[in-house]
Image 1 (cartoon, rainbow over the protein chains, first blue to last red):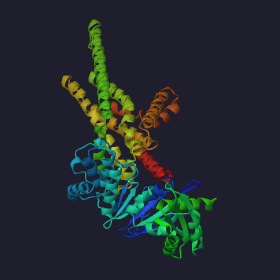
Image 2: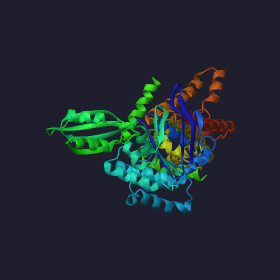
Image 3: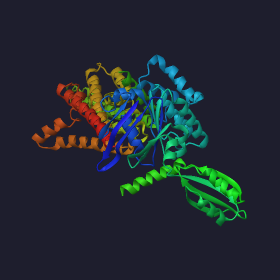
Image 4: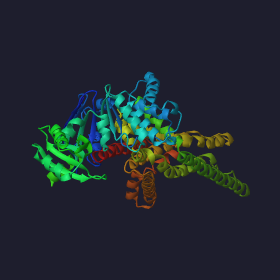
Length: 316
Length: 262
């Protein structure tokens, strides 16, 4: 549905977007993840034909964003970082205007207005002036605006920024419910958002793509080793000695916990070998009490930090 | 066409939702009404004095066409008042769209730049017409009380001239509004530029013959004089229409170049 090929945007010597390539399949939700200033907004602005790219191509639904901008614009719903609202208009007046300029046929406008208001749950607010709405409601009107012409592609720039936790949850669920019929790209710098809503993630840093994968794969791949967390009651030295004797254990870090004689262990093991059973066994064999035992997954947060800092080291 | 109407409709809504619009309308009517009253009393007094003098020294009173003089002077004054009003009408057109980021909505919608710019221009013209409409009442009064009935030609050509002058100044104001995100900056710069045009017009009158001729052609205010006298000169028409075209063309280029820079 969306094909981006070596897209580059240059401002003087600064490359805001540097040879970015990725694809989005129909009905997919793609998360665009990166720190502020990484080039997320610029990429989205190029896809929506707001900005021209310096080099490279981008196609939406088979149409080039530069050569066939009108066709692309007809097929895209875009929610910029700041919802583009006219404060002095009513919600209905505003949505009417957007429906008109997006090319919704006159006979369909009333129905579409009702439908999008239902979708984003602002049914009772049609006659209200936009300036009297709360931030969460303004964001919803922004989403309604992006949906009004039932576009094939939705591009949402930080759709949950500045909302309170309940509103964030609602917007995320709304976005999820829209996938399938719509192809969605959403950008965010909040990691849990990506693992909650997106099927695939593009991690971008300093204008370059550093990783593209599913949230699950990303967390798995980045782990060079498996990590195990364990709590046990007994001699710290003894436990460590036993653990080191097990083949496949790379390192053990222990820390005393509040309770007398109880220690926590962070054990790093080789990825190829599953040594969890042998570790548990050896601890119990020695007569110690095993209180807690679980394998650790790197959070997307850690993956993200790793990926983006690696990038920095490499570029230096 | 549908897009154009949508833009005009939205612009008008935005205009009349803002207190600035009502301020502009009120100030314009107050000032133009005051001047109309003033001009009218001055010329009536003068014509009465001339009639009295003629009686004292014998002989027929020299003909003095009060309505024509009033109209000419009134249109002259209004063309100057417009210099102060146009910046207020055009300041928000693009600057405010940029400030509130709605420009992103407009430029990512299937609207051509042409439709967007022309829509905004026509809406500003619409507001300008709304501003001028109540002044028709002044002429109606003059017509009603004049005897013999005054000629209506100069009134029509005067309004035609005002529309053309307004269109030229508005296209310039819209262009300046694309250059900044701040309405205040747009308004001040527009006012400054219009003031320079006005000064050119004044200095043209004071300069030597050759310079005067050149500046006379350049100064768009100078071309207005014909219209207020009831003369519709095709060269003045061409000057105004090309000025409008230039202003809108610069607006187009400015938006394009802004897209490349942003």
